Image 1 (cartoon, rainbow, N blue to C red):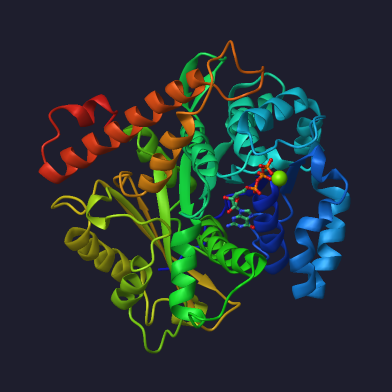
Image 2: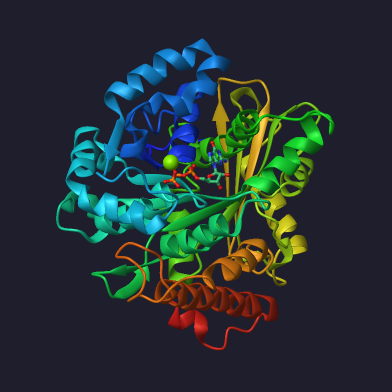
Length: 443
Ligand SMILES: Nc1nc2c(ncn2[C@@H]2O[C@H](COP(=O)(O)OP(=O)(O)OP(=O)(O)O)[C@@H](O)[C@H]2O)c(=O)[nH]1
Ligand SMILES: [Mg+2]
């Protein structure tokens, strides 16, 4: 029968940079996730100090409720760090500013009780400089640094927002660098280790295409702000459903450890959400809900290469044990995985969790796919990365915080290794022969 978990997982959010701050504010205003309470910290660099609320203008216009909440957030939860005037879209500067001003950031993290969350969910846009440069540094510092030892027990999940395809090479250069540094980071300045525990990749263009196909007519031109608002709403929906299973309203099937432990063992820990929301429980069954969701992955992936999948369904309480059950969800998701995912086993790791809500009449599903081939997913970004990195200078010519050929070469090596390792795992899972590797990975 349906049991409630006794100790709901606590989550905190650290959002750094302009886009991420908007996502976090939009989330904080529109949802009340019990698992987060008010453990939310927004970071930005000094340039935005003059009018930090400017980035929320659009949200405030949209709903007066935002004004009140953004005022409160502005007073209590925005930490402005760094002394230089902005990061100028260079992630190295974003990182340097966070490093120099870590003490300020640390104070906010302590005062706002961010490390009381079992999981710290970081959000940053990968095309920018501030969030993109500071976030990987902060994760590493909290995980291994000396200043906030209490933070060493936290797990880190990271949402990385890939730029729109049409954005210039420099943004995509940032994206490859940011993604790599969320995955791996030079601890103590040398040894590149796993950084975040789970990377959730979402692609702005991919989400925009989905919104375009189902909610507005092709000839209606959206402002950038409206576009961001809608894209952010999808990202927020995915985060909110993902956080649900650790809360009071779920069977204890997917807990935080289930999310990150196997991916970390495998050394493959990138995922992307596929969601379908607002489904009518009287009409739509589980199979159809999964089909709807996987039609819209938030990065352009080949599902046949996905080696891990977590299914989370959030339904109105009255349907639990009647129209929907945990057992049925497990059976259906297994069949789906075997038919659609990598290898004859339906991938290598799979969890399903049925959670309930008393706040809505419709139901939602999140399929979090992981371990898939990155070749298609970052093709555009890699291409533009190469164009940009060819123009970089050598270390001794470029200034202290400028990007150099050496940065590009190191990043390239790390991301290539990660991509290759991902492909190796896909090959093993699809062939069904592990050649002793599973043992090596700790199984
Ligand atoms: N989904 C989404 N993407 C955004 C939003 N705002 C900006 N972006 C994307 O983020 C990238 C730019 O990053 P910003 O968030 O503006 O940068 P930042 O972290 O403030 O860093 P700076 O470069 O120092 O300003 C581009 O790829 C944009 O498309 C937003 O509200 N939502
Ligand atoms: Mg900015």
